[in-house]
Image 1 (cartoon, rainbow, N blue to C red):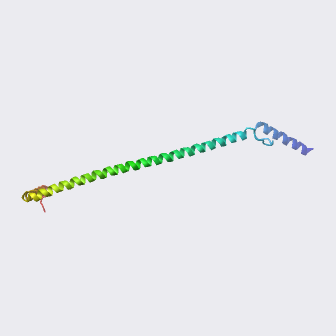
Image 2 (cartoon, rainbow, N blue to C red):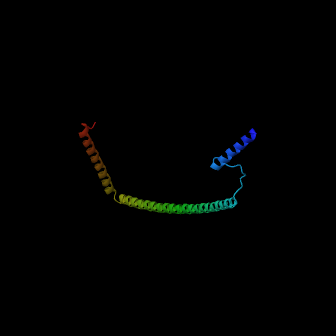
Image 3 (tube, helix red, strand yellow):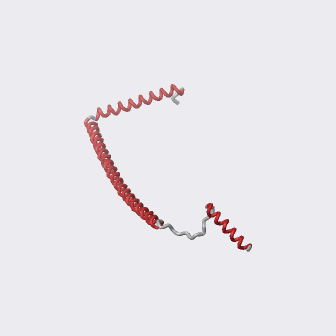
Length: 141
């Protein structure tokens, strides 16, 4: 009789704990009827999201390619314009150098005088700098 009392007390104690929500009953768990529907709905939404992400990725890739192409065209245009300007500048320098060269050949005396004056001006500037620095240091040596 003792073993039955112990079993009854144990059962009463377990029922009390189940009623208080401290432990779960040993009843077999059955899935609610809506779980399959919810799972299918979630899977469908995930599938749709994956498709949207794929579309976004494709759109981004296309836009990136367009931007890269535009950047190449802009860079090529800038290079061509810079090249054209440099070519024009070089042509102008050649033309001016030819003009100076022709003038020097036509007037050799004037060219000699100009070169001599330029040398004299350079010499005077050198002396002025040397005198100015000798005043500050006490001598040219």
